[in-house]
Length: 311
Image (cartoon, rainbow, N blue to C red; front, side, top):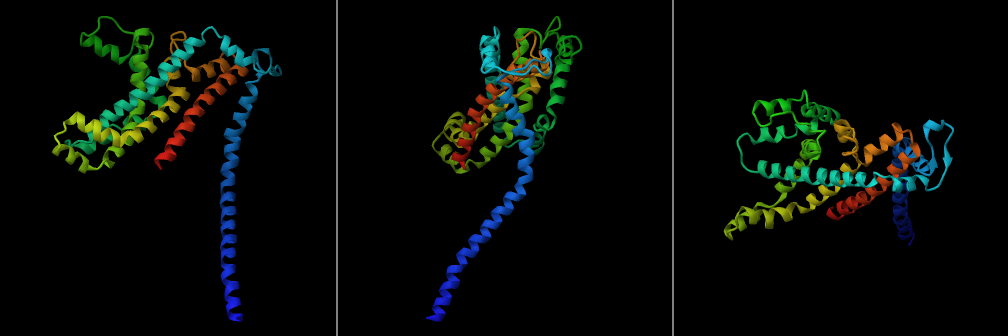
């Protein structure tokens, strides 16, 4: 009985020892994460809380650095009373839809093409990644030079080929404005979609295509009933992620057009900058940023939910 009791004590003690060891490992893990947590709190947490506070304050730098006063929802009311609000919202919708859907569709087309047996396929698969490697600012400024009405190489080439008789303002004429912006968005963002969709295409079992050939399916039927269902989860995630990226994008439109001509391409992200640092209305600028963040959080939550479902 003594041996048995001692054995039972030792056996009963093992789980407690393992539990204590697990707790110490958890504590060690949290301590290792503490520097990163403090850094994120300093870099992200404080500016976020400060922006939220500013959105409820009246604060114009033109009235002095000490002019900040609490005003409740005054900045949000000013946003609703803005005479150009509908133009901003229209531009935002056009931009978000176009900059989300078009790069995904183009990336899908390139992925389908390069998933087929081609000569030097390894080379073409590498070349299409070049736009992704280039910094966003470099790409935007390069395209701005290409589109330039007076000195741009695109106008020079089109004139040389006899396609146009006079130079075109690709970033100043309303008819060409959004197509020109979307072309840059496709160029910059399709490689990420291409890589993700290429991986999804290669994960589709080849046996399904072989069975489809036996059943007499053509290329369209094979894509619609085999390929598309196989890549649909990744396609949905890319669309949601594209919505988040394009909704908060500042660099591309600002470096291409600065929101012009006039306000014809001004979306919410550049509007935050203009309101805060050109018109020096920090309170209203913060309120616009908070509204934009709220909409982004909706899509971010949807993205995380979908990701967990796929896992």
